Amino acid sequence: MALPQSRRDSYGRPLPELTDAKQELLIERPYNQAKRRELLARIEELLPQILRRGVHADVLIRFSIQDGLIQKEIDLGVTRHFRQQPEDA
Image 1 (spheres, rainbow, N blue to C red):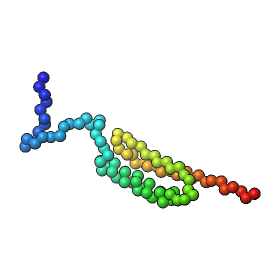
Image 2: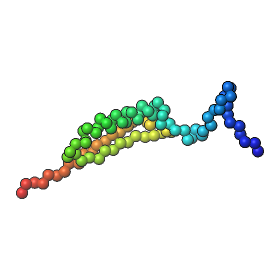
Image 3: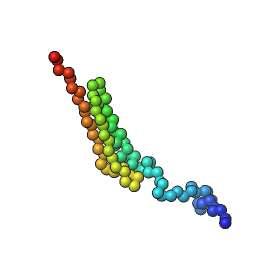
Image 4: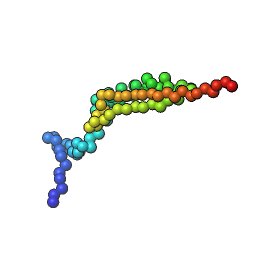
């Protein structure tokens, strides 16, 4: 059986190998780039509020991915834990 020839354009230059669309990396897509910037901006906006001495909190970041694309809704939640101060006896 003959080996497949490499693909070439009309000028004879080699073309990149075909990849399976199921494995396409979508991180560089403009939409995903914009959503990543939005996500990082929201985290950066939140950090000065919670990165302080005496703050104890849980941070929840939730977003969905469908078919390799970050979906519109991004949720950031903060649950602050307040420590009980001992009562003076």
